[in-house]
Image (cartoon, rainbow, N blue to C red):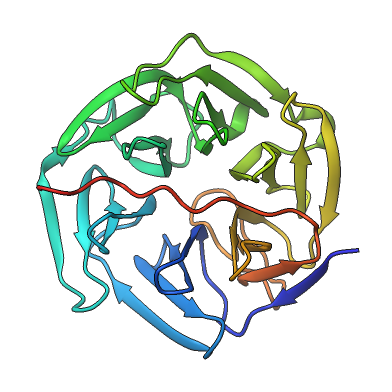
Length: 294
């Protein structure tokens, strides 16, 4: 059975988007509601955090060593060494209405960042899926409310993406060389599991690990979409996994204490960052956003 460790990082309001940085052997994640990017080094216990000017949707590692940060409608880079925050040129999106912000995102195997949007406090499908290449943003698809589960198959040929309220993970054929996508299809139906999908990642064998936010479980699906296993978690409202550790065999998992949107808990460890050991799975190095020359 896996061993789940509650890490000594306190409680986030809206913990999301963990990323393991192999260069620094540390995990980054965000507290979106508190507008924080956070970092924890397991070997030393060192913790660092940086305040951003707006709510944060997601982050990505960059080739430059900085972090790409998706804010409400624009993109900035955070330099962890200095704390400096600089705009990524004029890169931004135009939301289709009020109270919409960028949300879950992931870098493809070609160095582009894909990010979807979230419609706050209502269920209008006004959100979209965007692709950021350099400083250029383009829309890939639309008609979503709560974008989540963005990740790629190990060979980069499939893009996985979800609207949590639809309780299904979609997939698109994806061309890593060009960034073009094919038609979407429903790939995994999570309705029988009583939860919409939240954040997701893939392992080296192509298994898809998905946070089931409403049932406090982490699910693994086989590459064909069939359910492999469920792991019960000790806190409610788990949000997003990533693989990390020296052997990429530890799963870091974020959670919620108060999302500011629909989910809130008084659980004393709600919002904790967890480390899951002993699953037998290994991850892949996180793809980096190509910001060279910007």
